[in-house]
Amino acid sequence: MIKKYWYSYWPGLLWTIAIFILLILPGSSFPKKKWFGEIYLDKWIHIFLFASFVILWSLVAKHQSVSKKKNLLLKLMIAGILFGVMMEVIQHFWVPSRSFEVKDIMADGAGAFIGWLYCKRKLK
Image 1 (tube, rainbow, N blue to C red):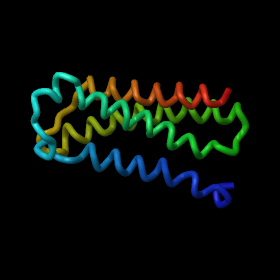
Image 2 (tube, rainbow, N blue to C red):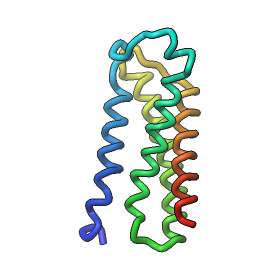
Image 3 (spheres, one colour):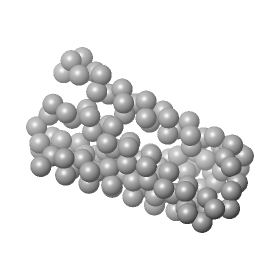
Image 4 (cartoon, helix red, strand yellow):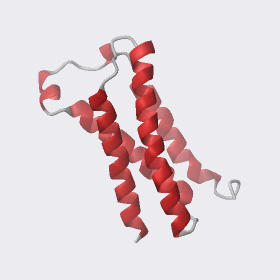
């Protein structure tokens, strides 16, 4: 089955790589505008990244039964949250001018949850 539907893995895989690259960029790579902080642009970006993570990886389940899709969606949401935590740890220890932020993890979790909700509603 993986051979037959291999193409459905590419969107999620490429998006995961894109998230990884974006989150390991040094802090000095981002603009320092005061209004960015006022509208919490950083957190909205995290929500978008991780909602898209769940949605794009859910394409893998396109040809599965509803019960298998529900199970996979829950696993994808958990994977998104764990990936967000892992990226914060990597930023803290290995990325210059970046730090571990609990608010980023909360935004990542919110995004994964939103992606899960969106996909779950599409099942009905």
